[in-house]
Image 1: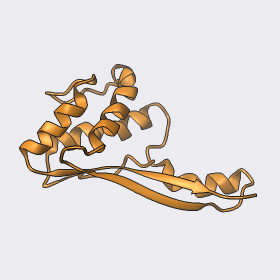
Image 2: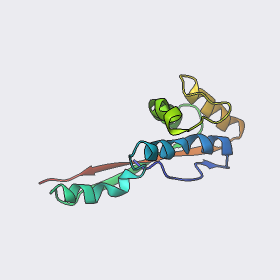
Image 3: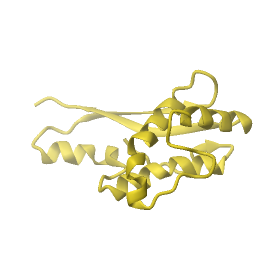
Image 4: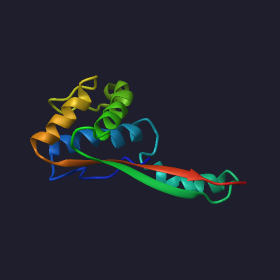
Length: 127
């Protein structure tokens, strides 16, 4: 995965962008690289495996049925328990709860914009 993409929305919606920027901040705070996808090949090779074949995908969208909101909200909620310890504050108007995906989608609809999610990497190799 790679959570470090900036400017997630177009046209820009700063409050949404600030919300999703909590993810790389949280991952760094707990000692995990938020851009591990770029590190997979050296990790495979360092583990004695052959160089992997890599594919990357990104959820994008803004309209009804878009999975980006559920995925991004679930990721935020899953790390939110660490926010207080890391000094991370949720932006105004958002809560890390079951309403987050709906609020995110409503915000983008209000501004008639779309969002890009994190980059997801898939790697495979044979030894």
